[in-house]
Image 1 (tube, helix red, strand yellow):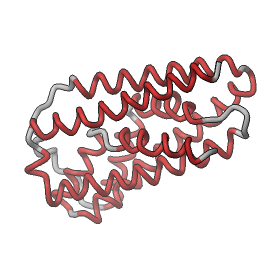
Image 2 (tube, one colour; image 1 turned 90 degrees about the vertical axis):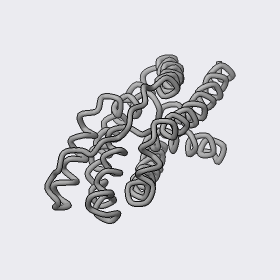
Image 3 (tube, one colour; image 1 turned 90 degrees about the horizontal axis):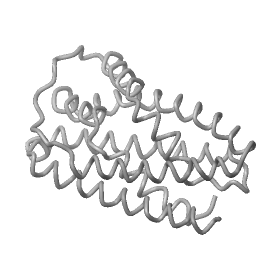
Length: 208
């Protein structure tokens, strides 16, 4: 894995980590009700769910890589198209104000369980790991180590995203709850994701 690969992966990955999806909004709400530390600790539940998904994706995609490089390239192209779809959805998302969520148990275990179930039940998370990670795998190198490094980087950035949203919950909830601000944030993420998708499509074309 090269420095250039990581230079492409980290900003694209962090943009996906920062998308205001259900888990991130939950972290913000938990921080607002229970505090920063509780929200971050609860995020461990989400990381556990994502770790399982990364392991499953790495196992299946490694098998595909050893079977057919053409099929693997096809997956990478489909993944780039998926990034365009995510960017489109974010750009045109219907923005509504954030309302107080239903009260839940205040124990860290209960909060982490909620994070885990929410992440495990989100089909978009599975698509991220099966369509996004392969974009940065070099078919000429051992895939296991690359998946491990990319997966570990993703989890670290996800934990950073949890912390940032927890800060929003504690300090900036009123600002971030404004539809105009959420729309601006969404479109910023969409622009970054879309530009990365263009770069990956060009890279796939040059590899033919």
